[in-house]
Structures are given as structure tokens and as C-alpha cells.
Image 1 (tube, rainbow, N blue to C red):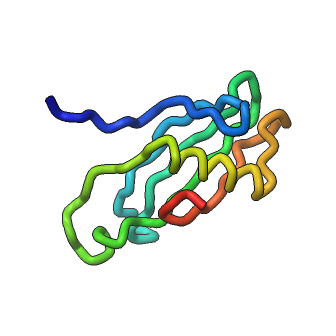
Image 2 (tube, helix red, strand yellow; image 1 turned 30 degrees about the vertical axis):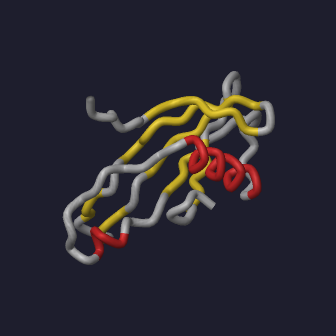
Length: 106
């Protein structure tokens, strides 16, 4: 039985529950070249989301075929911590905050 890739889920960080989902997969943009994937984070019962933008995978920059996305709880937890340290306030109102992270989610 093949393992299906996860494009959404829930993660618990420091006793707070966050929902996440894959907003955009890596893709080739006519204007900017390769763009990395983007995930959306939202604290449960909160109003303001965070959009985390990853860099494009190196294999795409080298012309290699697309690979499978690897999103696990550890990566998402690092993303939540990076967003919070960048100033994301999930309980405030407003537009989603856009945050750029590295390939590991830091």
C-alpha cells in the first residue's frame, strides 16, 4: 500500500493547536522563475493566518524532475515557531502575514 502525501493537518506546539494546509506547490513563474511551496498556518479559534514561503527545491533549479513534497509534524512545528518569532500574532486581526523560511522550516 502506497503512502499518500499529506497536504493538510494539525500540529500541537507548546500546548497550542495549529491547522495547516498546502497553499501552493513549487511551480515555474513566468516573471520570477521557480517559486517554492507555500503553506498556510492558522491557530485554532484565531483570526489571522500566516503564509510560509519555502525556497524552490534545488533539484528544480538544476532542471531535475519534480520530487514528492515532504511535510511532517517536525517541519510544521519549526514553521510555527519561525512564524511566531518573526512577529506573527495569530489572535490579532488583519491580512495573513507572509514569512519566508528556509528548506527546513526555520
